[in-house]
Image (tube, rainbow, N blue to C red):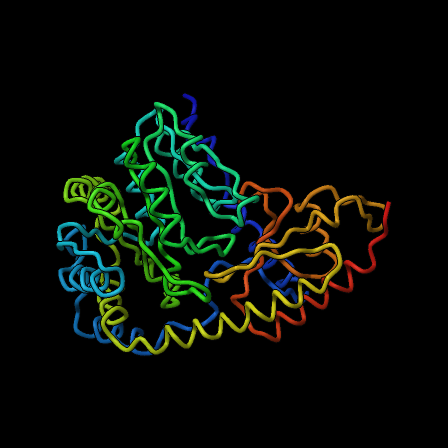
Length: 398
């Protein structure tokens, strides 16, 4: 047989999904696992959205739609950008895809060619490097651990080469919870303009901010508006992960290219979910605020509990629903004769002996940290952190 695609053989499995799968295996064996690895809200999709989907099915609106999305949804997205972000788009600048991940995939496929480079802040969402590689380009990582996990303009400038095609900004950030202020985005924008770079702005956690406020880099100047692809979706803010509704806004030329490609890959996004998404964006927004308030309380509870554990330091997560925890203070300690050398060792220990699932930082390009999701109840947060504390306090120094 002829060899398989080298490009695809180089793509790694999502480590966040792998950890979640291992935790589920242990649960199936009857072990109570506290799972902090999840990347989705634990809230149900709001009732009005679910009822809209039922109504759509009963009315028989279940056929193909235009690839970029139904007109009602594109209008709702246009209105959302105007109201929330001060951005003016036309419907033909919007494309709806099967989740924000497909929007990112589409974007990178149409702007990148082999040999191109894409700048990514590290720690990063685990799929960014693989999506870049799938587009035939090379991810270039910039470490942000020393700047409160914020990508600075000087970092971008230093990373730019004559092969750099784009940079990815994710605010609020997964996995760090960092939120970029306007001044930082303005400075990064000047570098992007200077070097004629595309800017991919992943704003999927926009509604989940607890300190500061959201700024879209596309709103800063007309030049940045032209060169930025804004990616967003309904998975996080509306607890609609399984509905797979993402969208992108960009120039008409780019959106046309993305629509052409998507028409041959997946065609339109789920028709029923599109109609439900209109209700999400145009209906009562109270559930979004309620969920945000719950996450803010949980963030405080988890941070206080983790900061009380010796050898552990947590970042000040200002958005999303993750806590980035530095566990390097545990390296060198031993448990049952086995030495802890990195966050992967610590995560394995916690899962096996405390029955708490977290995602080690190697999934995000940093082996001294781990991501802990507080998309779970306060009771589960307190119980899991208590288990971790008891286990950590039992560790022996070498």
